[in-house]
Every structure is written in C-alpha cells, then in structure tokens.
Image 1 (cartoon, chains in turn red, green):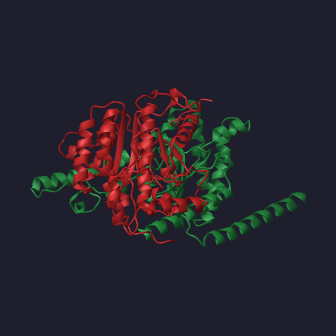
Image 2 (cartoon, rainbow over the protein chains, first blue to last red):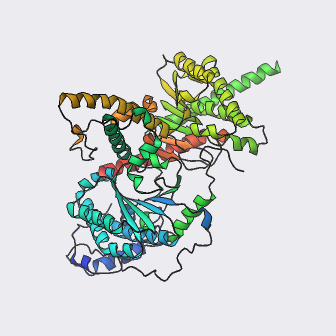
Image 3 (cartoon, rainbow over the protein chains, first blue to last red):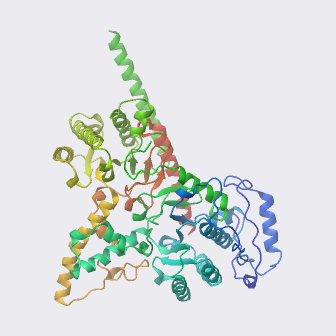
Amino acid sequence: MAAMPSFQIHPSTLKHQRFPNAPRNKLLSPNSCCPLFSLVSKASILSGTRGNGVLLNCLPPVENHADEDLGSLPPDLRKNSMPSHVAVIMDGNRRWAQMRGLPSVSGYEAGAQAFRTVVDLCCKWRITVLTVFAFSSDNWTRPKVEIDFIMELLERALRDELQQLTRKKVRVSIIGDCTRLPKPLQVLLREAEETTKNNSQLHLICALNYSGQNDILQACQNMALKVKDGLIEPEDINKFLLEKELETNCTEFPNPDLLIRTSGELRISNFFLWQLAYTELYFANSLWPDFGEDEFVEALSSFQQRERRYGGKSVS
Amino acid sequence: MESKICNLATQFFEDLKSFLRRCLFFILSVGPMPKHIAFIMDGNRRYAKKQNLEEGAGHKEGYSALMNMLRYCYEFEVKYVTVYAFSIENFKRRPEEVQSTMQLIQEKIESLIEGEYVLSQYGVRVYVIGNFELLSNSVKLAAKRAMDATADNSKAVLSICIAYTSTDEIIHAIEKTCEEKSEEFRVLDSSGAGYGLIGLRCNGKNKGKSLIDVEDIEKHMRMAVAPDPDIIIRTSGETRLSNFLLWQSASSLLYSPNELWPEIGLRHLVQAILAFQRNFSYLKMRREQN
C-alpha cells in the first residue's frame, strides 16, 4: 500500500476552492480502479503545494436553492409514503480517499459535501427528521491526526453553515456524549442548538460520540434515580417512560423509518439500537462521498416498496 | 425387499451428504467461524400461499427447515443458535392463527424433548426465552419441561424466542437493574457514604463512580445465556430486525437472503459464514491500522 503523504493544515484551507468532483459509481467501483482519474486528481492537488504538504480545500460555496420548487419529488417516489425520519450512517470516507490515493482527510471533506447534499434533499422533499451519525464512541481508536481533523472539520462546517441552516429553517439537535469533544466545538454545538431551536422545516439530529447502548444505559440511570427518589416504582417502568429518557426524546419521531448505511457494511455498529426495532434497513454499496441524489432516490424507492407489518398479518 | 434396498440407498445418501458437509466444514474452518448465529424465520405463511398449501402447512415446512439448519450449524460447531419463533407483536394476528401457531409451537417443543435426534446427537441445551406471563399454561409447561430435560447438555445451546421482543427484554432488564440498584442507593444514602451517579462516560474516567454499568443491565437480559450473535440471518429478503436482539446486534453481521424460511438451505448458511469471514478480516485489518 502506498505511504500516505504527511498531513499538514495548509493555509489554502482558508480559500474556497472546488474539490475535485467525486467520480460517479460507473467510473469507479470498489472492485476496480481508474488509474487515469487518480493521476489527474493527484496532479491537481499537488500542483499548488510543492513542499508544503497536502492541499486541503474548504467546502465549496453553497448553491442557492431558495427559488427551487420546494416539495417536488422525483417521479420514482410517492409523496404519501415518504419516511418521516431517515437515519444515515455516513461510512466509507477513508476508503473513498484510499481508492483515489488521497489522504483520509480528503475523504472526510468529500463526505461533508455529500452530507450537505442529503440535508438539502431532505429539506426539499419534506422529510421531517434526519439523523446523521457523524462520530461513534467506537471511533476514538482512530489516529489522533484524523480525529483532530474531523473535530476541526465539524467546527468549521458549523461556523460556515449555521447561517444557511437558519435560512433553511433547519433545527439542529446534538445527541451523544459531548463532554469529550474539544471545548470550542462544544460551545459551537450549544450555540447551534440554541439558535435553531424554533426552526420547523427539517430537524437535523447529529449523533456525536453516540452509542446506542450508552443511550439506553443513561436512560436506565435516570430512571434508577427516580426510583431511588420514590418518583416511580420499578414496575412502572415501561417503554414510554424509557423513550422519554432516551436522547431521541428531542423529537416526536424518535424511531427512524429508514436507516441507510453506505459502503456495503452489513451491520449497525452500536448506533441506534432501541430505536431500530421496526426500522427498514438499507445497505448501499456506494461509499459515503459518492452518495448523491440518485443513490438517495434508490434508497427511498426501496423503502416505499417494502411492506411494513410490525408483526401483524400481511395485507396482501 | 424393494423397500429394504430403498432404505439402504437413502441411508447411504444421507451418510454421503453428511460426509461432504464434514469436508466443507474442514475447508471453512481454516478461517474464523461464528460462535452464535441467530435466525429470524420469516416467510412461512407466504411459502404456504406460494405452494397453495393450507395455512398451517407453511409453519410445518418451516419446522423441517429449522431442524436441517440446526443440524448444519451444530456440524459446523456453531455453539449457540437462537431462533425467533414468535414475537409479542404476533399476538396481534387473528386469534385462530395465534392459537394454531401456539399449538404447533407446543407440539414441536414436546417432540424436541421426546424424540428429536438433533438435540441428543449434539448435546444441545434448550432455553425458551420470552415473557412467560403472556403464554398459556400448556405452552409454559412444555417450555419448562424442555429446559429441564436438556439441562445437563453442555456442548451446544438452542435459544427459542417465544413471546419475545427486544424492547420487552430491555425494559425487563432495566426494571430488574433499578430494583437491585435502588436498594443499594437507599443503603448508601442512609449511611451518608454518598456516591457519584454520573452518566457513563465513554473515556472511562468516571466509570468507576457510576453505579450502573452496561454489565449490570446485560446480566438481567433474558438472552444472557448466550454471547452476542456473530450473524443474524433473516429470510424472505426483508432487511429489518423486527424487535429481535436489538441490544445484542450492535456488531452482528446482518444477512438477508431472498428465499422464504422453508426454502433456506445449506448454501445460505455457507454464504453467511463466508460473508462473516470476509468482514472479520476487514475488521481485523481496520483494528490493526488504528
């Protein structure tokens, strides 16, 4: 495996430069490599940076969707059976970068772009809640350099995007244990939640340092305290009480209708556990940076074709 | 005379198939093998409809498929097998259907104890997992007898989930944990010793101070008799967990072949194991990279 170029934050992060477009799936699939593309992208990246390390690009400027017809669905999708709550595990950023001979951090940048596309589409198609898994408790084992970059990317994205999110009336909520995140990021996150709390278009829930088991555990601890204080008896504990204590109590649709995981991994990886009881799971083969409108439509279309019985009898 | 030859021929082919499976296991076991496989046996009713059988017949075919899968799993030295036989949500179905399914379950549990070859051959201990309060007395009795009859077996474990949902299991575990811990808290409170009941911190700094931990909840889980499943197989192409082993599925490989449950065969098990082995090496590589 080729050695990764050493990582340095380059002053050009302050410039707005368009990131090389992610190739469409048909050009580059996990099982093949397009050598011409990777040469081209390496050249464009290295050309301006002799001896200065890796060029990093900021997120490209946001396109203005204000005058698009809000609520217009593609022809493949039916309006009356759209999911209310979609959850996404944004997996595959590092593999995406590796396949192009780029450092992992470029993968995260490209992933951020895909994230913004999906948020825009959810706003456009009137999906009520979107939960994204930005960082799992299990991810702390990654190299420090990568973690620092992810934290810095989140900070930068929040600062740049808060105005846009407010304009689009997106409400931001954060779930997970934030105390381990860098202090400036914690402040920004609280500010984002506070500023957007009255927005009502799309509820964007970001799961940072979140683990499904820990969510249930902290709910259990809260209820144990209530039992100790005599507020409830152990036999009063039921699923409604538990759901009120889970971190997803910030929305009236806490349980996703559809969970999308990219990069072909067929597992939940300790993300939502309780909340996934009847969620339709969709495993997409494309890596997260390649997940665009077409892939999202395919996932939603697959969801709409499924028959959800919740244990009851089949309607057909 | 002819029937004797027929029987001999059948026996010969069965032995040959068993031998071929042993060879297959020998090859597969070069790589990592799963220790626990869970099955969501979906598609019995659709199978009956597809084959134009009467309604209960799909479940009967499903039972034969289950016996075959158990045999293959135990031959492949998969020590723990869990099956989702009846969900609490299934009680919502038509009463006649619920009744006939419960009847079938009771019959099959009884035949498991009385004559089923697979259990005794592989030393299988049976657990019936679920909310027993929702079961009729006859099913409860059959379940208890099955568990008692196989209590001395220790080579393998079969967990049959009846009147089970994961949310019910988690609530039950939390209730038991709160009962156990609230006593401790009251004692600590009254002694003035104090405690830090801070939420669990992932970096483990305050872990020692929190009196409720993941292990406390896990020990009260009904499924504590088995480790977390390595693979969860759901037939009929549906990809959802339907309230099955939610807590335990955190790292499980989810495999969903399109075939209906009665159509499941050895090849699906082999495909699932191969997928498990492919993911296992990728996970190991990621851990080494980190």
